[in-house]
Length: 322
Image (cartoon, rainbow, N blue to C red; front, side, top):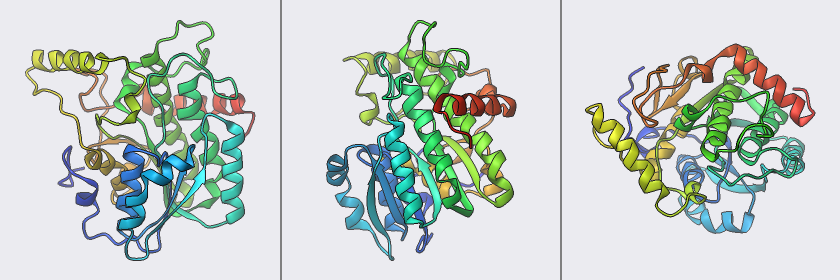
């Protein structure tokens, strides 16, 4: 699919001329970075945005501009959500269900990256538990609130290339812990979750999409040691240079959030449902990647049988059937 958008397109580029008045959106992770920009862009085009955050005071400070730029009936409100606690996730879902207002899009944006080895409140490895299982329970519990024609958008990452999910040892009980492998597992899970959610809900007109926002310097890299990010970029550029490719460039935050708003409201549903996207385009499946930042998605991340198996394992881990 070619639409004229690319790596440098911003949220305002992809939403140009689009009126989202009357649309309602839930976005997780609105206390910094991509979540704030996604909320700002959608509210500025008329959407009613519900932002979910663990630290409401921090999110309140971070989202002043979201409220300031809301236009055409757009608005912003917040709900409390700690994805590393299923008690918090279920309380958030219960509150949204009790409120009863529907959503045109749910954007699962929040996440952690390369954390030291640890566990969520429920005993899951931190990255898998937060990035995948928290969103798995939230999205499934409020699935009935997504209107026909609505979408679930999972913000994944090219980091999925570092590892497939490990359904036999999801919590690194027998595997030596590596923060990037753990991140890769969680991001692959985000994609597989979208694949199976799409399969289960597309008959009623609800589609699910996973995406890579691009390399952006946000709070997500806060667990990296001094100099670690610079060394990683140097390695990537060496790989790209050896292949005759131009060096890696970070995106701005408005460029990074562009694919989220594009996937939620601009892209044709039949072209993106159950797919993985980047640079406001559908990505091609490729297992022969030049570097971690080369375009493309690993085949294991879109495998439908693999997605079903992850779904079943996730239900087992959280103790709920959806």
